[in-house]
Length: 321
Image 1 (cartoon, rainbow, N blue to C red):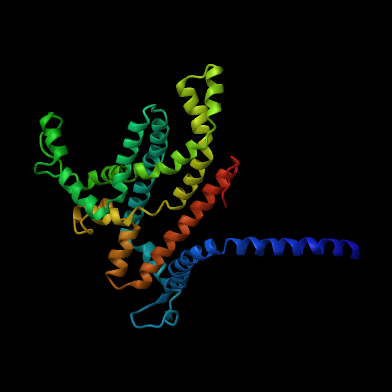
Image 2 (cartoon, rainbow, N blue to C red):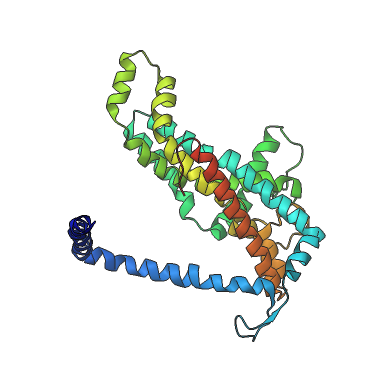
């Protein structure tokens, strides 16, 4: 027993020294990471203390954590609010539509761009597709309102001119058009940017795999499916898990801009999501504990969805957590 202990001690000491040695070698890089760590602590971990507000009756002026405890009162009001069912429906529908349409779109776009032989044209298309991401939703909303305007908007002018519709369509004024418009505008703004990680994964594929596939008689579509897509599948599953984990995040900025800060009552039935509901009812109505309860419900639901998605992915051998 003693001999085994003596033999193991130098190994442990070497590992510790090796770790410290590598840490000191990368001291300049470690210093660069410090601002990010501080940012995460201040804006991600410290605000977690505010979770207790969901179980208290917080009022402005109260010292954090010392307000009156009310238990699950705010959760009861939340789930008994008849408007919350509509809010939850809108959040789920918009998020699912984005998941079903906007998630696979960058994958398909990246694979198709990889098939272009003209490198200059491919880079030009990629650059153009990236540009909308760098436009804020405030500016993007103004452009979209002009583009889809009832009065001389490009889309309505084309639809009326081609005889597809008799009258211009008020795309951002009627609730029945909001869900498609939310999905389309989100796809337009994020398509190019979301393909970057897939392009990076595709560039890591060994070119010899395509050459061997050609020798075996594989066609273009066979190579796209069995080599390109199969090679980036782990990346796809990883991002899918993260996307499912954020399913109830319906893009607050986009919804607020497209609905003109929820002032259009016609859109509220289809556009009001959990984030806008928290802002409108909780924060603007000075019901801070109620807003915390709604936010906590959303966060817990996202965590559950993340764990479920990760569990399902583990069966395919791509577990993340």
